[in-house]
Image (cartoon, rainbow, N blue to C red; front, side, top):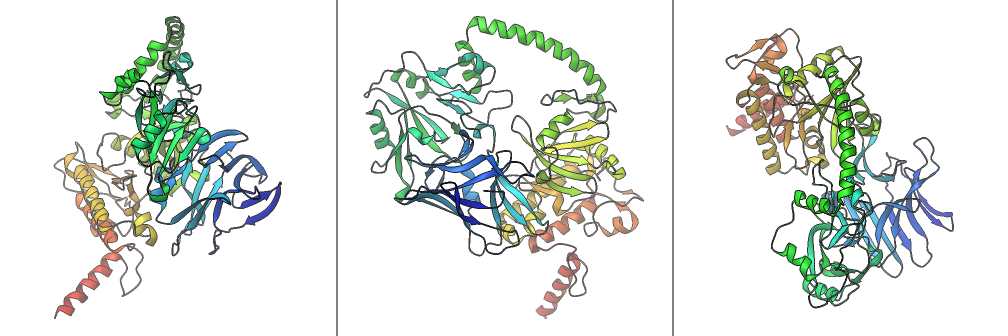
Length: 626
């Protein structure tokens, strides 16, 4: 598989190959699997590099076990897996349901073949493509005709817990733990195989069963329930579709001393009782999706968990610390104290040089993952300073594939920090004189504003001529990408549109009335309303904003900024602006939300914008009443 073609091999010879050009209207289906009769494989491979289309070292293929799953690997080393196909979806991809509005996924497992096929639904205008890139990341992309390029809408591995074997055997990974917490936890009845490594936040060696836990008692053994789990690797799994129900499946597992865990569920032909007879590897939990996994433990261990909720992270840490020998703790503690003292002294000197977001000195020596607090007297809030090298790594050196958008200030990139956090990086263009003022304005202004309907500013990065703002990432981009697109607009039901309108209203009420500062945005438009993963609206881009005194009604400027079509007449013609200017802009967005039409795209009925179009139609409706 090159970056655009799917190839069928037999004895290292190409048997079939599909080609696809982004402007083609005929789309070949995408198929991964194995022909059991001929041993032919459908699989994807990466390029050697972005410039070299030769076969790379990364591969996406079907792994044939009793419960097959798709595996992403480098050579023979596994990097990520989908989990088994249960209940009409891959258990390790909970977001599959959200992609069903334009994708059909067909799974086949019979005497002839095991395969999964992705096709575009009939009538959908979306072009979709799946590749394994040269870095070993599986990407699903859609073609954007307006931009004439592919955009990544989903990639795997998704987060730090998606990496295969992150917590080793009998350990599980929970991505909801904070950055200070270790995401790996041993299953009940197990303890770290190498406690010292777990203390150093490396769980790849996994866990081993505690002493006295190995004996099997088919009458007294019980099961610990791990909810919303990605089921373990299926190499040691067995499937029995004749056993129906969780209780019956658990009883079958209890009677077999080789059974270490089980899961049961699904509907119709997809229902199954799955049991594991060996090491449990590559387990994680999800916030949504997954299946309940039942892990075998003895009676005493089960009693520790039966009368209490899921343990807090602090308690699990204490259990891990107790398992570490006193001598190891003393050695490590002494090393950490000495090293911390040295690092602290170095940081204090560097922070003094970089105490504000506009320090002229080079601040690149500050650790890429440590966040530094700015001088409160200058900014009046806690703002974080990111190292330039961190941002370069997070955005893959500001690659084109990570570009989210572009404006007069520069470009916005998607990035991922080393701890897994997704960010949006607004990079000020080096040749933008106007952008410098907007940059300072946005830092000082947004740092003081905190509201659920305002985009959160995480910090900034300054190094010589580079100036960047780091925001929380909004996965659904701007409101304009939904309401002006027929396919995406169909997803916005009236209840959701009404919720977006209320969210924008709450954000404006906060800016105009409820915050400590009265703020006039001056550039409110659909593209500056960003949507989070739950489609909640958040107002962004405060580069043009102005602060008003509490008793100030309006202001005047000779420098007209903003977007024509959204500006109020008095501001566009005379430079007068107030909170009414934002209300006017909000009214234009409201009309766009209701009609699904762009404000400045009218050339019919002698109207020049959406307001004129709506006004003319209202007059016509009134005349029809007579």
